[in-house]
Length: 303
Image (cartoon, rainbow, N blue to C red):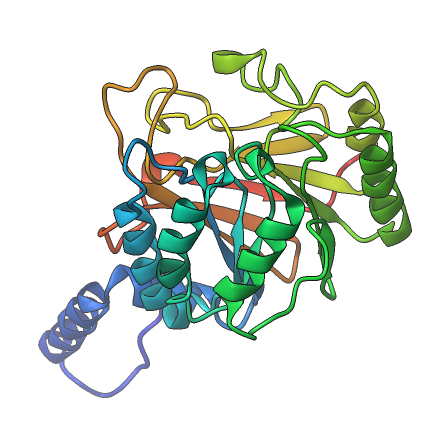
């Protein structure tokens, strides 16, 4: 940063510089991020991971994440919040009922998909509660849908059964991504294809047609949850071939590599006008993103 040249003494210039540096250092992390996001950020959103608490249907970490997201909405210019499924364990009414007032506290529109737990009940039950969570901010008409913006589109695909797709589900995803070409696409699914995360290689999408989905030239990234992985003990963000994979950690329980420790976290995606995607990870109750879990990638694939 170049200081303006005034006819002051060198001592005074030094004092002015010190004052400026102190003022900059006093800015909170969120304020500094807001400066980074202005005006170049074109889209920013938070993503909440699995909840499905057991044995008690309580959602304290979801509530903490909701409170944090509400506080970050202004500084980070968040536009909406995504959910990667498995909110209600086995899709029971008590889980849906208990989480509803928590998610209704979100100030932003909430765009969830189903997980294998929601398939413990019916699609109709999920849709009923997904719209209750939004309280009219948005209306969801199907468990899979597309959010399209000027520079990127998000294809949110709920599994057809368990965490997998049938032929029609795969065809729907392919059609959406193909229709959106050449616009870059972020695919939001409950589980990535089996084998992406070797920590639990057997879990995920097994349908062979998912390989054709991944091969779509405008697919930039796959965002998924399901595995309840400890971010500090796994490789949670990676590039395989031309596609980036971003794991969203579970809010209420960690399972992989074991259940000995759990830290509630959520992630924030910020996209700038050049197509650069910054992925930050926040621990609930901590204002600064965790630098060790930061990840960047470009929406534009170099085929």
